[in-house]
Image (tube, rainbow, N blue to C red; front, side, top):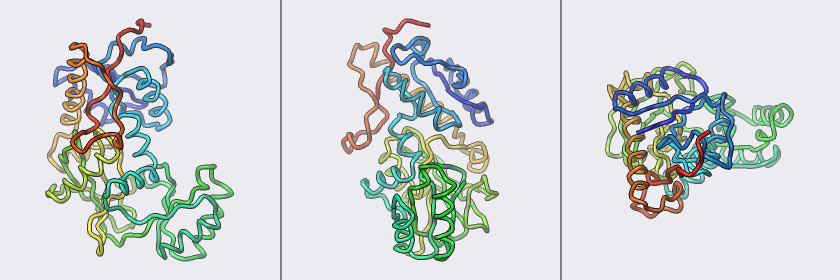
Length: 321
């Protein structure tokens, strides 16, 4: 199998994945997106690959490249619709609600005045988040009306157009931890808990991770969450509510895992690489059989028994650049 792994910076995770692909016998080519010129009209060099595995740190680079490649029939991992949904907190919330997956309550407004009403409908404290962002950046706990008015004013005056969207989420009084579960190919393969005395439990902010058993309840909930966004591979972040139990908070389409591999004892990178090769192999077999290859199916278009693992292969008609 020939895999292109797109990236913008080769971190430990990307090097672990390259090693795993090579150990599994794949021909893997790291491709720095910062050096590429795309021609949206033809495949060119991309015709060499059975699939493209995205590991770019830049969401803009990821969306741009995957959008072009999918339009040319290249199977990308993850598919564009999954990346778009996971990378936008509002889109994630809507997908989870459609699928009946429990998630914290949310209120949304597009101006500061109704934004204040949205916050007060949830009550204090509540959490204000940008709809697009990671590593807990610009996430605020709003403890009272004074704080709400101040932060909303700062967002309106100093923020981008995107920050005019008020995405307010109920505050969950979690037990000083959250849970992350890694789901690959529809199966929950490993889980960690992240503990911190701070209300934010991101490891990027100093939380300490340790391995956690994947119970049947945890596996079922996370597998349903990932199916709702149509992802091949994702990490699911959960909160434990004293009243409602486990709630899916967010999904990450391009998760970090180097520390989780150590704490869980699960070779996450190898399982991810193997699943990528399984997808690519299925596409190659279908192409060799002369069957009609269809683009990656959106989660909302699938039947109950389907998953987003079946999708389009690159057309071989484009001339090599």
